[in-house]
Length: 458
Image 1 (cartoon, rainbow, N blue to C red):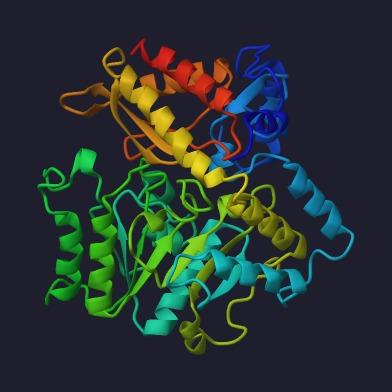
Image 2: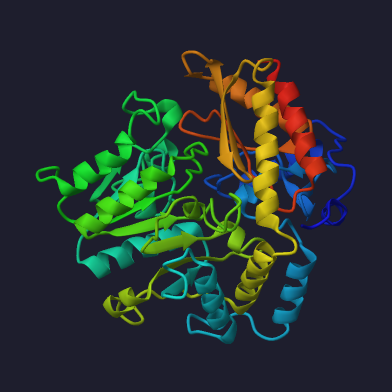
């Protein structure tokens, strides 16, 4: 396993270190300039931090404040910012060729082969890959491929899901702000309850419930007169991201796959946020026995360069029309080289970043669980690897979500303490630990201790 001293060298020393309140004067001035020219529909909106310089798990804002980044660019920088091997890959490839239009190139072929080699067992070595720039692109393509292959139109997704923001992928996403006012989105999408055991839609308790939510998927798929009679695919996150870092029992995913197989529709695993080693396994679905028909990926696979894709069973290729899904910038040779470098780093057996993520994640969870007697606002601690969610509540007994104004206060206190962390969840009350897999233990525990101290005030 990689030494902690080596990991510390990948980041700036002595973090966190704050020199102004957040936002500082330079950030305020830049935000005012941004408002004149940029669209605030961007994901960060008016987030009061503007990053200027990053290294590993640490970032400076425009005012010189040094943060520990427990968000990893929203689970993007799996190996940290500016990893030396990634920078070497960029320098190496930029002198050869980068853009080749949407025809193939040697690096694109190499990447498809490498991706095939790291897919879950059952799909591994028996698949093709289409590459794009963002997770939304990958999911949008997966919808079209599923419809083309099956000749059917309906898609099943789940409550709490986030699959992207285009007209197809946004129809699968359930967050109000991503859907409201943008319709009509594509028709034919049905959302079923996810296995959110802390807030069970059926008012039941696991495992006594016998995974009723999974059996309900089988009911709606394989029972007449449910209205779901033309289903092309079921798309599911093996660990929900924006929905609150929710970890379902593995049987939930297995029951869905069994129902799909009986019905004859495709199982799409969306691994854009949970994949690339984040949960301690290459893919979160590997905590179950499910072999997906399609798998979407992105974020941590590309890291410092945009890269995403959909990987699918090789036999599906015959049903997809040649040249039917062009994407001008897809498969940029430099992006492919960087993606392959990220995969190599994540998969490196000597560094063992995934095994380390699993171990460190358990330590972080344990610290929060141990703090619960003193920190009354922690409702649940959950997650796998370095994909940990802390759900905060107003009342632990009733599970009433913490009010937004207090969640906002906590987020600002974290920022002013030098910790970059963003909330998520259906009630926007889940703080998520999703640092780079290269986060030094010292920095991870600093962030944990700072957050526990802040939560004690609530």
